[in-house]
Image (tube, rainbow, N blue to C red):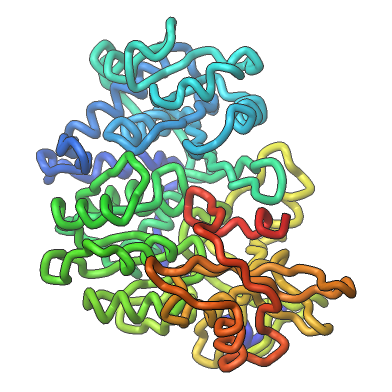
Length: 523
């Protein structure tokens, strides 16, 4: 399709990646000048891993995998809480040419059975605390040849990572991989069906680090970074692994769920300069009664992804902490953020502009490109688009259309190239024959001082016509009725967009990334 003026593209920076290339070797061998500097710090125990220790342990783990009989291109399912062993294991797999399949730690036994079977993983790397979820389904996985754990007493016959590192010499030479070889898999959330194994290449790791981590965030070796998003997510993997390792920064890891209290404790104790969050967490931090002052923190920039950031949250955070939140959007399919607000050019209520190196376009239901102000599906062209969904040809063809990757997100673009979120394609509501973005209604509700969170879905009225219904979480101690909230929305939006019903709930269903699961509300 011809690129029109609707494509606000930037000439991609040329990142010279040789044909023979191993991303883990590249990230690890950059740091001889900072061998003793902390690469990782455990937020709770304070234990750390220097760059030289990370390098040596990753190479020892790589050799251990080969000595266990794993071969290049074999898959290892990695299901571990964020810890000092996580980057060692992930990088070690890549060094050996083995493909780590990083998965969510909050799933069910049947989810893991599906992923083990679908990926035909020959190895499983699992935290001791998560073993009870895997144990009932291990017998269903005939391809599985070895189980590796973070503790010696997890399961009889399993190998402990610490012992493997002690018992094996460092790998002499990284696997002879190519820039276009498969590097890692990430499974999609599976909110609309079975999870999809999303296959990424070695070149993708460094492309995202250079195009977003260095070029947009301006990461440097004196930064200390802390990501609320876990390492097994595409967002967290860049935040806490490829980005800081590309520049020699220090990363703080929190294995537990990031509650507002714990996040602020980490910020005060370890003084990160860069914090990666999600909208619901920023809302919770601002509502937290024990939140510290700006003077007690050392932040220079924050980012948000996972869902569009309500403008009200961005303004409040910047007013209280003097730091911008760079709201952006990325995806498992693109590995990290490709559209983002950028330092000094933030417009809250928008998702910003194209990240340099990526081209964007909006396409309407008829396949034509949208003009300024028109709502259409966001499509992306860039150097980190996944190779495919494993064992899923039909969905691969649907999502990866030539050089363009379909996001499934609705956006509009203004004359300055700023994109405003309109909701997921499958979340859009047609009210009286006119499309209504649930996010627009949610954003309006969020401007009411009593509202902490809101989600809007479609519900049929007594005549079978679809109208907006809102689920609302109030701030602690606040009281408001549905009549007032409906009037509040009517005062800001076209009258047909107001929620016909308002249900007050204690919390909204969310994924582990903080995305609201609207399909559960619809059900």
